[in-house]
Image (cartoon, rainbow, N blue to C red; front, top):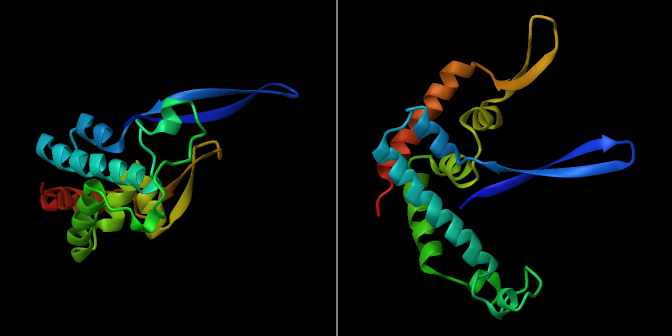
Length: 168
């Protein structure tokens, strides 16, 4: 699944334009930087694929649904079952994986970083809190986690351990 994000820019007063850009999955970035192995990337990729399929299944949307084929409104569904009654193979697989990860306290981390493409740093800010970073001239740069290097290394290790727990 390729995620596209949009940013709105002001071109001239009163005029706005949108730029759409592609967001690279966090696990691909971690693999490219050689922070995770190919085997860990494959396991986390499997979780990601199942997570996205389960998310789509829970919405009841399907690429082959009559509404999509005939150009209907997105969000409508040919499935008359309420969302809580829908149960597909992907939803069952994510539930199984989440149960195993929850036993080790890793489900929130994996869902955020792998499923929702949150960066390790952003996850650390959510979990441990953040502080503002300024450059030498006193200009704001970013919000970074408290004890940035230590907690980022800790959470990366936890993500690697979670990859070892993910089985097909």
